[in-house]
Image (cartoon, rainbow, N blue to C red; front, side, top):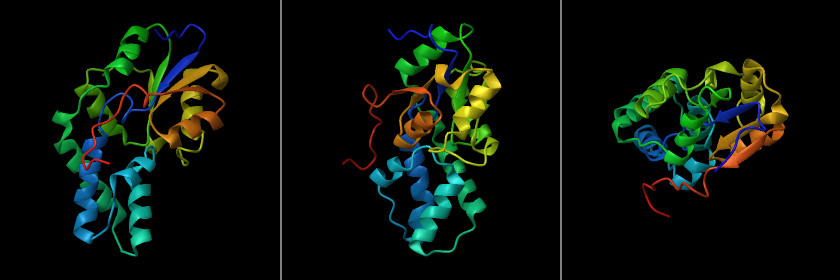
Length: 199
């Protein structure tokens, strides 16, 4: 059983770490990309884990040479995701850590998602009120793999970066934790998200 006594704070990614949202996110992305004939395979999707929606929209459409209203496309994607929220399940081993740690050690969610969407995910999996702060894509100018989101969470919690531990499911998130000088736990060895298209 993982112990937190040697840490000032616990920092959790949301999508793919606290909640098994990634299949729903991928299906929502197809609602945005398919009408424009943009190929977006599932492996590419997972490689972008942790990046804000607007950044991914801009990248995908620029690579395809297709003009897009980034804000509108991001809105469509998030709306499609929320339409599937009832199908999202908690990732139990990580959620169990949150429940055991609540009130005993400061905790934050650090995510590339939007505040309002993250709040709905946390409510859906029963974790409303479990975290001292949420650092979302609106809160920093730079995002994972830059360390800024994790450093902002540590600042808000009054925690020393080197005594924070990060729970993550993406290479970009783990790189951000490394750059922030924090320990990390990769959830992928004990949680594999359902694949939509198979490998």
